[in-house]
Amino acid sequence: MTTIFGINLFALFGQLLVGLINGSFYALLSLGLAIIFGLLKIINFAQGALYMLGAFCALLALKYLGINYWYALILVPIAVGIVGILMERFLIRPIANEDHLYSLLLTFGLALIIQGAFTHAFGSSGLSYSIPEELKGGIRLPFMYLPNYRAWIIVASIITCVGTWWMIEKTRLGAYLRAGTENPKLMQAFGINVPLLVTLTFGFGVALAGFAGVMAAPVYSVSPDMGSNILIVVFAIVVIGGMGSIGGAIITGLGMGIIEGLTKYFYPEASNTIIFLVMVVVLLLKPAGLFGKEA
Amino acid sequence: MNQQVDIKSHAHIQDGNHREKIRISNLHAFYGESHILHGIDMTVYQGELVTLIGRNGAGRSTTLKAIMNMVGKRTGQIVINGQETLNMAAHKIAHLGLGFCPEERGIFASLNVEENLMLPPKVRSDGMSVDEIYAMFPNLYERRTSQGNKLSGGEQQMLALARILRTGANILLLDEITEGLAPVIVQKLGEVLKQLKDRGLTILLVEQNFRFAAHIADRHYVMEHGHIVEEVKANELVEKSELLNAYLGV
Image 1 (cartoon, helix red, strand yellow):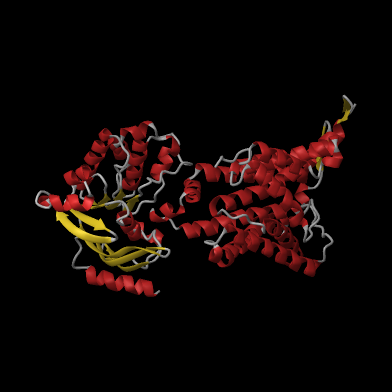
Image 2 (cartoon, chains in turn purple, brown; image 1 turned 135 degrees about the vertical axis):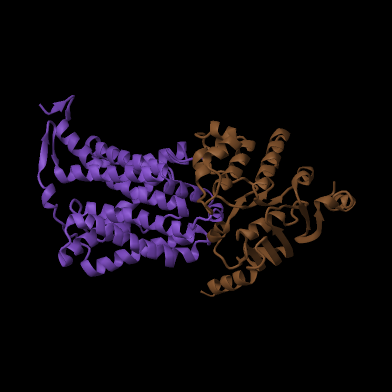
């Protein structure tokens, strides 16, 4: 009943769902990276560590402050965003005029420090965070069982991504961002406080990582290396989508999650490398990425 | 904090002289190590149209950018509407009522015409309405949904000008607005500048096309090697024409 042309639909849909879940996190993280890269032209290597920080914040807030998942979903991104704002203001800005390689190395160093500190404090084995009461259980669909929390991840991440895309592409604030990306000096001359815009944008991009961290806490194990594991894949996705392309980051994130899921079903041995293979092919055929503008 | 005190004390000194819109004294400006402006002194009064003329590289564009705090180091004095601005953050200067139109026009490619037009925040309350602007530049209305990088040079220039008129800026710094444009568009720009002057706006214009400038300006400052070498009033153009020819190399 569940096989068509030799394909086990249960297993296939199961892998597709896992792919969509992973893709949701890829999309959220690469969106944050794309926003930061677009305006600051720096590659934030600490994005993965801040995602991990988001997951730990949710866990610790529940354990010590009794802040439940739903409050954490709002408060943790704000807290992580503030960490980002402080990072930008006091560490990145002083070297903003140097070669961007320095800020890349700086964020890489920060990522190692944050990860090291959490490993020291909590050990490297994962901790678990339980699924909120309201989202336990699931729905039985014809070819699969869909846990409510997993459905929620997909819906919430798509809403967040589309909302962010809309804000950047369709609002006045977004127009400031896009124009600031193109010509920050002229924006200053028009009377717009570009340094403040940069700080807030960095904070927002980082807050997205914090948000992804809270979302991830109940499904992945919360461990200090959760960020560095996912970050390499996310970088590949940003390269595939095209550096700085907002829509590209979202679509590529979800798409690559699905491709990874399908690979897990059809040729599991390649599932860890498929994204990098796609990256190589895209770089060869369209170096600016699928949605990037050719320089 | 020092900066605040400084601004206030200067504002106080300048109170009696409110018709002076821009006063620059002993301005030096640098790009990194290179010293571009060597002690500029100039004044622009309310409602005047003043040009900066001279050869390429004389420091005319740098003077405008120095006023907007877009160059590296600056020393001297730049007083706008009675406020000393040398220590002001770049994004605060426009809010004194300045509108800057850069030589490269600075149309944002990722924004459409209307987004470009609406982009700069209002700096004073009595700017031109969008309807008035479209009446002045009907082409922009027709192309309002086109991306910024799809416009012709003339359309880009009109948009760059329209954009700062909407903000209510009453001191316009315009850099080479006729450069590379067809004669019919240059003529249109000349008409627009006359209309703006009639509205009482103060305009400081960097211009290569001296014949264009001569028609509409009240005064000209001639620049050479980062200095102002001559000031010519509109009624002195004939008697000083030989001198001007020597400086401009025409």
